[in-house]
Image (cartoon, rainbow over all chains, first blue to last red; front, side):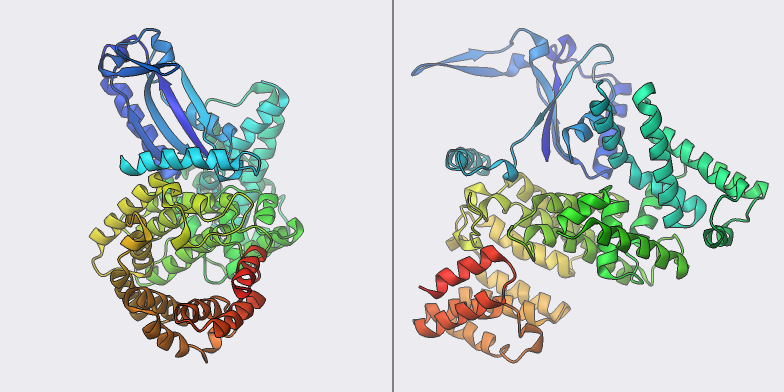
Length: 140
Length: 417
């Protein structure tokens, strides 16, 4: 099963402050552990929302909103894509992650839908959505 | 945490830690079977204690400490059965302070080397292929006997027996817990890669049962492959195998319909391919090719898979390149199955008539006597040449040979035109 693991933003990450040397080196050790265990598929850090944009949908109307956005704890600062046997295993890996901020921070774990989640009832709709998403990925 | 949550957390810890635990212990006691028992014992203690105390901050170290104590207890008190006593005695002098010191000192050396030793021991050629597969999934994949049994659609006691026998064989044959010497390495590594690819293929094209795929086994194989890349980053064929599995695995979603009917490669919706897997696969392939321009069999197969992955439509497939890669592969590992695949590629590149000649040359090949892809391919070529009646006969024959229910349906459909 694949899991998207989100590191939530905080004041520092939103201000574009890089984590200090110690956290960076701990983090790279941790990433190495994930690689050695064969669970790390992808990962990356996100730039502060000051360099971000949102598109708001209201009926047929689209409004572009420039960053920065408020509520740092609801924003994402980085992610890992992990391959684990179960949510419990993913939780166990995330617990081993060095504290990303040193202070208070939150990491969110979200399982992805997989082949096994295809059910005959909604398969067609899912497949159509997947196809469109996959095309976007193919072009990126 | 509720008791069931704690239980799940403990299981997760075991899955993460068990390979390293067994590997570290095996170095100390020089016996993989005994090491696994010690690891199991430590886990039983954890199952008793952790629900009360909570999972410790460093569960791996906790388990290792307890397992080591247990190993020392066993040495001191000679609680072990006589036969196993003797096995342990071969490696470390029993009941002496030095034996205890050996275990206490052998603590936190480089665990990577131990894992690699464990990989080579589980995949030792002295074991049957089935035993190697079961032992590898158990010891390195952290799967329970029940999980392995379910994955291979076999009764759990059968798998348990197989694992017990494999451990006995390793002890009886006095297989050393070590990474093979350079001269033996290519052959021994071949055995390891074979086991991993076998696990992948069991998941990817289930050889029996009603399912066309068992994706969890593919994930297990890929994880084992990635672990091996971490342990042997400069072995091109390890990277080649990972590349092959990533690129083949990328098609999982596109190769069956919602009701489980298989869709063949050229008819798949390529937008459904997992492009993350393709990207990782192509990356691993590039690293393998950079390490060894003279490509090994797994790297060549990955290169073939990559030709498909790079083509955005079936028409864009570089068939002459694929045919050339099959020719190179056939030179490295002569096999009628590869010849058959080469024929398919030649057919796509240069037309069905040329391919049919190659396929007909394989007709008397004893290894392909009951190999359903042979009549299936021949049927396709005859169909393209307009020889429909002959084609149908070949599809019927192919359908009678396959063990997979879904594939049989597909072939029978072709046979009835």
